[in-house]
Image 1: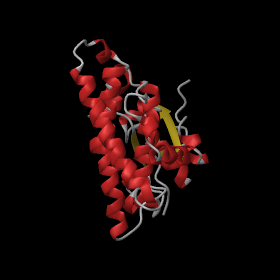
Image 2: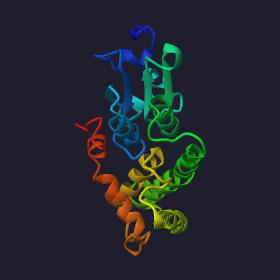
Image 3: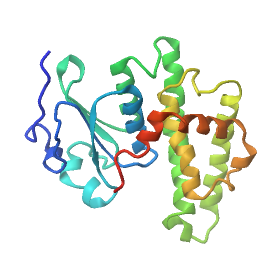
Length: 235
């Protein structure tokens, strides 16, 4: 099957972030915990892709060009010119991107019952770890830290502790969340790494955990992870 050539006429986002290799996956992202999920998965899978830095500034994520790909104005997003049946695929939401890439390659997510074990823990991250850790970061490091009322920080600190203890139990007898290394691990570990950036590791009892820190160390040792954590470059 001939490779589909993408043009700016097909996808308005390319008017602002022009591809140099339009026949490969186009990644629009920034190296946040959500953003690096996509770049790490692409590196792990060895897929050819072209990254484009989309900062979190309104000038980027709320631009008409980016909104044409993701009306929810959040990174990451991708365009795959060679989707199912040769038709291009446009995707946003990091969890959806991970599932798509895993199914495209037949890797990082098994078939049968194991598939749903992976999806279960992926949804645990998407619905719990990411939103709750993000709120904790907001009320600890960013603008929310200026709020004198302690209740928001206490709420998200306690919820982060609870989620970490769920992960601690799950990892008691295994190296990876759903058995073999999978997109569930790629989704979760960057948010664990983010706790240090937020300056909350002590507050959430990180040093009282055993299995979760070991899990994060294993994850960060992977060469594809080390590459993906810096794609696209912040510079």
